[in-house]
Image 1 (cartoon, rainbow, N blue to C red):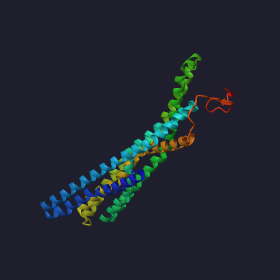
Image 2 (cartoon, rainbow, N blue to C red):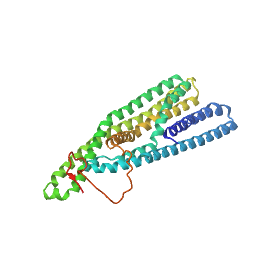
Image 3 (tube, one colour):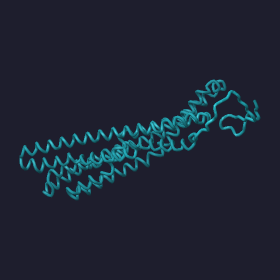
Image 4 (cartoon, helix red, strand yellow):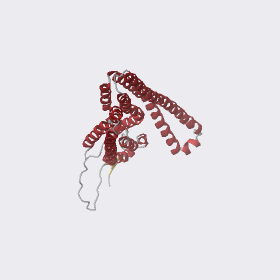
Length: 338
């Protein structure tokens, strides 16, 4: 199965999973407006059985979607793993500068992101307008309040992206520099100590560590504030729509069942946006890893087709051979004949 077909399958699973998410509100609507009004135990039993069956189907489809995502992630890593390792090994010929790149870690980061809950969340996002439309069917005032709540949480998500991206990238950059300095100092410990440079290297490492921690703290504070606000506001707006629904029910404009159903549907509509905010750090890390992998593949291209040489006959003659270390601009040895 190609990745494109797999993602089409994930999209189909997501369609039915999100459609079945309406089971709870519809069940609540029927219980309040049909069962309580008719006092029919038989009706309650039938719709309860239907509800249970639909939830079983939803759980099975969600499980299938998760399994497909895990297999897509593993196939992705397997498809690129061999090439990445081969290029990584070849890059070792370029000297210690190659240690700055971490393509194998980047590949693992992308696999973890693809096999987690984040891709499914992004498939759920297009259903937010559908759920809000369902709330409009109950009553237009409930729909307007749902739109207001969605816009506020969406703004919070955008702030989470814009406010945390720059300090997060700067923190990661400083962390990589810190690790590179520590590795370099460890490799050359005898020279550093003999020249009395230990304290100087320590101060450089502490400076990088402090700056990286400060940038990471800014990113974490902004992300935590955005997440806390969106979580509290989501709970507030769900209670607010319940209060508005109660007012409309008292005025006999809507039924009590519609009041409860509107609150449940709104919670489902806001859940993907809330989850995207929570998954945003992983999404940024995966996106950065994807960019670094592309740059890595361009920096060290794959080997072309090798020339087939004839079988050796036991005689070797070398004339005017030149040789030099990898990356050298001129030959160290030249004119070798043997």
